[in-house]
Length: 511
Image 1 (tube, rainbow, N blue to C red):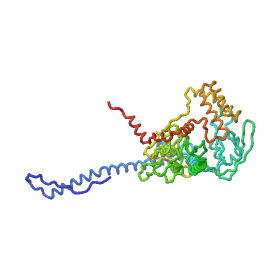
Image 2: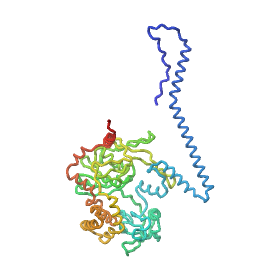
Image 3: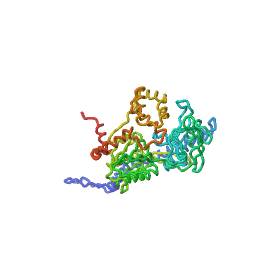
Image 4: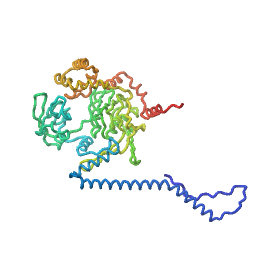
């Protein structure tokens, strides 16, 4: 705050035309000036004194509550009826501290959570390369809750051993998996590269065989790509240190194949590293602001700019696919490309996570704390708001009444049974079965066909894209094929403009 000038007040001259009645002694003038100065100094010091007083009170409260926490911790250790593990008390206290913030993105991270997060942020881990799932409780069909392989990661020990989606892992190193928690399973599969893991695999109802896998460094999959005609399709699964290099590899492949347009699929991408999102924007934006972060401490505010020389030329039309599962780093990319007029957005409104977290390690555990909010190039924070697409395209949704019918369908196990007995069912056969189910359960045929396709993908290596049932991807391809992309881009608005329009619409009309 700028301080007032500490100068003597000017003594006014006598008003013209008036004769002085009595000369004021000089000492009185100086006394008066001093009093005025004192009053000015006192008034100017009040805000500063109040701030200092508030700061002192806050510091006293911090010391008081810290001491109370320590005293309670010690009291429980000494007087609780049973002996208490200090680690359990510590973790409970840490969880309570961070939960009290009311921020779903700030939390205590136990050893398991810290390990998982480290795998993602480092982009690799020691393991066997299998995506797995495990039912919680008994399966609907009454069978044991064994670990099921969702998909092997390409070129990993599990993939090279021929393990398929849908295979059941019955045992790990001789231990039945139905009695293990998911944490227990991961602890046994992951570890130092070079170590061996012995699995017993069940395929179908009768085939069982042992597999010995040697752990290796597994890179977290971050991208998928393919050509759709002359359009390059690039799906980003998450943002890790490896994401930008894999994206560059995909774009180089598109260039070699003569691509004319590009679809960047950010659907169901929950985010990842901020710097990785900025680096992805570098591929599309020739300089300029990508995102800015603002915290409570002004010195920690930052602006991230794109580098010059893009990999995707300005003559390449770009469409970004988003949905409710697109969050955080995905929204940074979508928001930057939208605000900078570089891409057209198709799909559904994004999740709305506009905050930045930092992970602080504490021995083997740690905590994650929101330290800033990020703002798009037009200076908009989308936290709890989300990014609206330029063209909304939704998949058909189930009503409450449909949900009851769907529960009956799931309980009957009709779709998995069909896929098991028709492992190579064609699109025509899938549609015919969907129509049959429509007659029996009165559910939308397109929805049923998509459920069948999802089950097929669960028990086989999923394709990079599914143009037959993906209505949002279909719409993006239609826009390119119709030749309307340039005209549509001229109608797009920045997030700032959309926000200002929404605020005006929300204003009450004057009567």
